[in-house]
Image: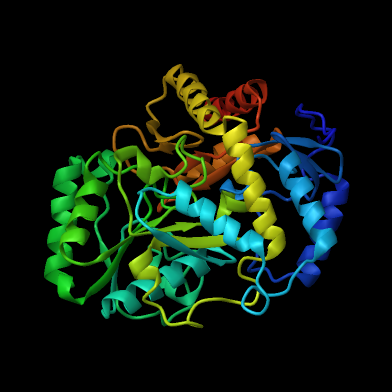
Length: 438
């Protein structure tokens, strides 16, 4: 177990002198297209703390964007990776396969929604897995069109940029993009006021009119949207879409890159409404910080792809597979699904005590929660407020992320290993940021 002390400590102004010196090196040698949320450089991380090169200890409310769900340097993950790296680091599963890849696929068949026969294919990143899910759907259906939703984020590769809704910073200047991608209206209860059934009828009507079921290979949706603002669709929206897809022979793809692997208090967010996707995309929290992603789905869809049509040199790397198996063991053995629900209760109770008309909504599930900030009276998104609150938190040693189509959402993605004391302290600092911006 890491000996990193689980307390916040701000010893210097942030950034400290060593981080500032490293930032100068970054500016000299790293593309400016690779931005950073905080100008500090990490040396250690464990539990709910990230320590920087100047000895500051920061409370982590980001988990590397929902990656270190079980905690950075989680003991089982560390031990599994150390054991594997001593055996071999790579052979390429497509050349000489190894058992851990198969074991991860077996675990995914057990963990993903539904009791049908399943297969998996492993890749490196969420974007790569989303692209491969589209490939599988097109191969299976013989159709080409793909429907995604307002506020969606699916990645930074060419196809996934086309699928992502927000232009800046993800798409600006990078076109042209892949064709046959169509956008439908998302259920966004705070802003559309529609029930799940009403929002589904609106979306399906647009899909039928502007795309046509006979042309459609897949509907791809985040059960809880990530970069788009942690938008939770109204109850009934996802089941209605899934039912329509099933009736019309369209592959229903759940992009659970950010919402999967215990983040929402269930293993996958789709489970909340008993939605059984045809394909589930996993990444981020799947391997405790090592690069791994997966597409898991119905055997008949996965089997439709010709041999050699899926893969990649590093897909399902043995170190990442060892880490993934340790992550799964940690979630199940340490009761982390319940811990995610406890975190939700703590966060909601803290904000229930805040009387501020600039908070339009606290939403999300488990340890995937957000606060949407608006201008009082008008309800217009207030990105400047979100930026100011995040800057206050950063200055006090709390890693805080923003998101949302309009940049007006503060999101909370703490590792499930964070203590109540650290989480409460971090939330108090965020709430204090509201006060100093009045």
